[in-house]
Length: 638
Image 1 (cartoon, rainbow, N blue to C red):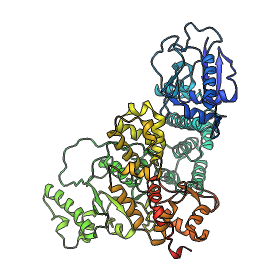
Image 2 (image 1 turned 90 degrees about the vertical axis):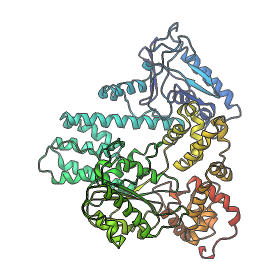
Image 3 (image 1 turned 180 degrees about the vertical axis):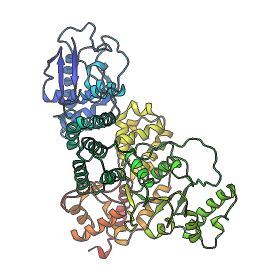
Image 4 (image 1 turned 45 degrees about the vertical axis):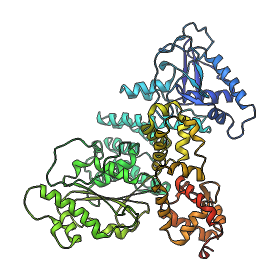
């Protein structure tokens, strides 16, 4: 008996080429959940939640076992590596499979014939499969082999269509959809390189309409239109994307896409080559010391994870010509400095005159005098120049450090990383007045007064990035053995790199503690902060500083918001806990948004329906302090 499963579209089951009824709705949900997380353990708690959401019956576990037994009878023993079932009578079973959550689908070693297809492991269930039985596995295998056309032909629509209302399934389906887009873009790029852009326009346009904010896809669509001599339509695609980005996300197109658009405006002929790729990001390679070239960058973070889009955009801005000023902004602990340093390490070849790093805050958190900052930079350039060829005296020998700094920048192409700025006046004297140098500033506030700056907002990790980061510290095998608990741990830490790093360092020390047991320690509030800050007391100090430097009304508002039961709240809830009218509450919340102490969970909606969110560490700190400030609201909030 030959059984095939399909999840690259609506769920379907085929036996010898004929459709098979997979059973009741709940049995289909269970099958879809296991298929989308096959060859790894899915906890019973997750399956219960998938089947009954927030209202499971008292007999949920027993009912789950009944459904599992039904699937086992349906599935029968495991098949061989080609999908065949030794000793399997016709009609006795079905074959299943996929990969680990958060990863591309993977195949597995050949199974032992006759082994059970669904096994119970450590409080959960593992569904085993062979590669030939599931379209998602065949898709991944063909994509890795470079057979992109054959891989794309396996798709019948949106992955697991009809089950996207189940969060456990929807998250896996979204990963599959993203993988499809990546492969589709690679296929379209290859078609353009072969000069077949005109033939691919219809398919590119159809896919772009379903994913209108995908910039690489839009750029490839524009290129295909240009190859077909339809340049005006390509320009219209850009204008549509620009308006959509501004309306839905409040963002401009990326620098690479904007440069491509400008090149289309200047293009004389109808045919056009493929768009130039963005600045190449190369890991720092050992190279001989170049005399006269300063390098003050800290070590590249060894566990740096994810952030492909922010890294690419930041690199494009810094290497893209005039106006090379970027501000990386985001909440405390989002990894702003790590992103800037990681990107700077990969741009050495673009900045032959050096890469400099300077902090605007001392170890005590207080701002450093401007002259101290300039002297540090000039000292680095002076040391480099003494090592270099003889010639003009070092700029550091000039009496005015501001003039000396501008003198050194003139005619040079250097990259300067300015860390932890709080206001525009701290940054302006460091910006080059002439030359081709670039500056990247890290700051919690948006520094909206810096004219011409491109802002890179750094959100928390995605769940996949956070789990991967955790695995790099405590070991991928430990995380892989209980990914459900790992996901809950990083969510408890708010998905912030700082929080995940703290919990990872803690778990690396507590090697004997199972991840499932550790989840219970991160119950929120004081317990969370005590657990995370135990090994790094400076975290509490940084949290206190981030709140203490706010205006009085915003300072007390943060602490009062700690009285809320959850870190996500509406304007009405905020006004109630702040004991003020909605208009006053809006002004206070906007101050906190500007300081990156709040984010907006919903980008659209009326003022009273917008959901605000406080980062996990700050919320834990506010809850810890809330009891001490419950009756001490400043009068001018009213």
